[in-house]
Amino acid sequence: MSRQLIKYVLEREDYGAEVTVAGWVRTRRDSKGGFSFIELYDGSGFSGIQIIADGDLPNYESDVLRLTIGSAARITGVLTESPGKGQRVEIKATEVEAIGFADPERYPLQKKRMSFEALRDIAHLRARTNALGAVARVRNALSYATHRFYQDRDFLYLHAPIITASDAEGAGEMFRVSTLNPEAPPRNDEGIDYGQDFFGRPTFLTVSGQLNAETYALALDRVYTFGPTFRAENSNTRRHLAEFWMIEPEMAFADLNDNADLAEDYVQYLVRYVLDHCGDDLEFFNKWVEEGIIDQLTAVADSEFERITYTKAVELLEESGESFEYPVRWGADLQSEHERYLTEKVFNRPVTVTDFPFDFKAFYMRRNDDGKTVAAMDVLVPGVGEIIGGSQREERLDVLADSMRIKGMDEDHYWWYLDLRRFGSVPHAGFGLGLERVVQFCTGMQNIRDVIPFPRTPRNAEY
Ligand code: 4AD
Ligand code: MG
Image (tube, rainbow, N blue to C red; front, side, top):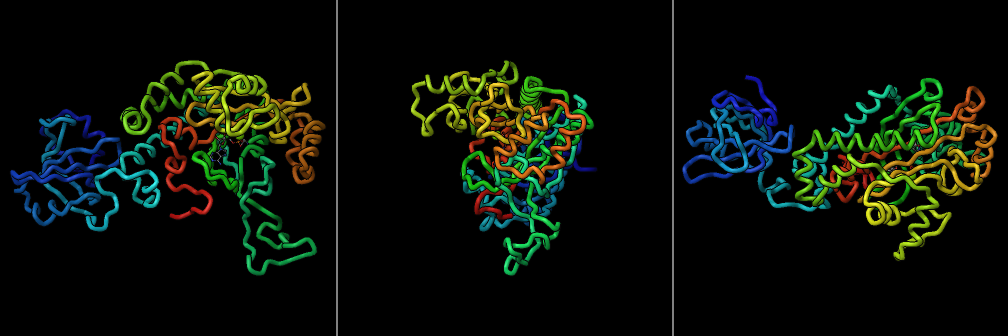
């Protein structure tokens, strides 16, 4: 008899059938009547399954009574309608095979609830908890839904390089990739001689696959990347990671409106997908993590996003009478508190903000005719703030070169990027969605460190 995943066994109604399951013990209660209830969990869904292990089993004393929390077992038995509350079916065990015991004196995950913070210190075991298991399933669903969304719309999945020589955002927040001996690097007149490094030049981990995606969009029309990106910004906030996953679609023959339409459709698709496929997990989040999250997600999936310009957003914030930690003024970037005020207090729904000042946005964004703003957009959602940043790209060679000069960038270094504007340049646009931010939004999890398996943040790269 082959093993079945618990989520499928829980759906069965053919009582009397023999089933085999395997997983880890969540709880074990021993009844005075000489038998035990075991809850076994295999992560296939939110729920574990109840097993009744009778004292008559030949290895009851030697094995069953040693199956403490965290132990692994394979159990065969008869599928039975459950008289107890909380489950429809259970398994009356005919065979219990203890596979791996977990010393109860040393196993760090006990039945009492632990804080998410404490769980970070046992990140190698936290996937066994209800919460982190549910997060992993939602994250998986969002990844799968992403491919479905883009593949259904004829976008081609592109693998952008992880090691790069270019700073795609021009913000200088890159991790260096080098094989030089840090204790005695070769030197020249200018300092360390990266000409002798592995790639014969300075190289870094990518902050974004966008520039590479643009080259393919200007050949294949619609592409998207989905991969890890890295930022060496020293920000210890609940929504920043040093390593995070980004999805970056890029479309040729498209402007800012097309871009915003795609972004909003994509977010709604993701939310709808999670509502349709992660019901049990969402119910857990609704009950234990963020009350009302299901209603909120349903509203997001069903209603239009607000769309306003940055200038309008600044007006609304100024009129609000709210005292923000960071003062609001035209020309300064929106802070998390401003983003949240707009989505949570002013509109109570996601907001797409467009046309930001040129001064604090990236060099590649298309300059508007007003001379002050660029065709940029951020999608903001309640609870999290920015989940998407994007823009129409500057397709005019002279204007792009001018923007780069103003931002102090070396045009020679970006010769290939400028070539795209020399040969068959067309209007094009794209954006980046931070996967972890969307997982936070869909689960209500407060800290981004708890929605990626092994978070990388300043001073933290264990596991
Ligand atoms: O707004 P960002 O910096 O935009 C870009 O990287 C563009 N190249 C995207 C594009 O147009 N193709 O980042 C995009 C998104 C943000 O909206 C946010 O969701 C996420 O990436 N993000 C982070 N997520 C976690 N930790 C960080 N440090 C993040 N920085 C950005
Ligand atoms: Mg941004």
